[in-house]
Amino acid sequence: MRLMLYEAARVMLVRLAKWSWLKALAMKIAKQRGMKKAIVALARRLAVRPPEKHDTVPRRQISWRGDAMADWLAFGLEDAYADQPETGVIRRRRTV
Image (cartoon, rainbow, N blue to C red; front, side):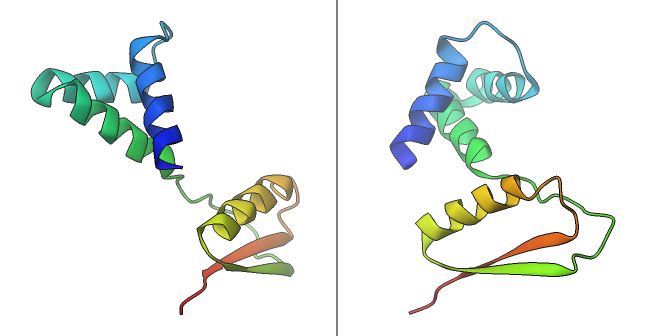
């Protein structure tokens, strides 16, 4: 997963001509600290997804427990139920 995020960030900075606020942020870091650190910073930014705010309280909740892979599956469930605000997905990391 880490390698894929790094590669996506590198492609976004080096190959893509389209400009975005993420690329602007990474280019600012690259100017100050170097391209490698900018790629890592962009990869970390791509890995984090800001929480979505809902105006309504979900009436039905789906609880999802597991490791990091299950956490990504829960993100997919959130996307699938994004148009239904009455359904919420609760992610819980499994502790050993």
